[in-house]
Image 1 (cartoon, rainbow, N blue to C red):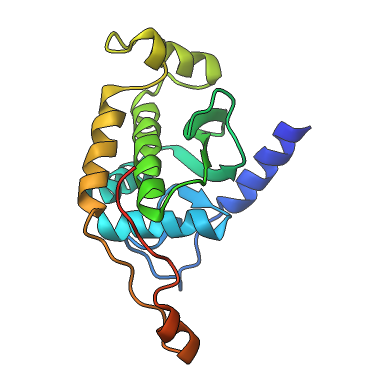
Image 2: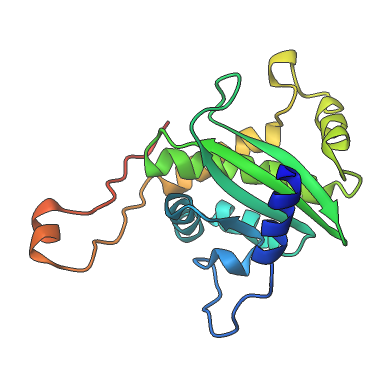
Length: 194
């Protein structure tokens, strides 16, 4: 029942974007990466505006049959900061969900999301991945992985470092001026690094 509800919501959210909506790197709807939570939407916007590598991941996913949903969760079994699940494949479209624990700075969360989006690209490129079992086979078949990293990839770790470097100098634009905000400073302080 839960899977049916997720699938129904997924189909509803994947309808064609509004043609009056702007498209470009800062518009996640133009890509196949979606988030309902405003905080996760902000990470996608920051990644798209501050990191060339992050933009390339979004562009690659936009040209694929993969739809990616980003969800913030309280915790992940095993203590990971983030991971990707295969949800379903239907009508020529595959759906995955990235879950992240929101316990880092904006920079740390964008970096983590870049790592997980690289996994999404790996799945997009692996047309044989159509369910959780075939996704597991993909990662278990990577000879680069050790038992402790059996569901990871070197490419995801390299991508994470690239995104970290690219956003290290990023500073969010100051908010619209109001007396309270100009005294308090930016609403979203940014500190790069993990």
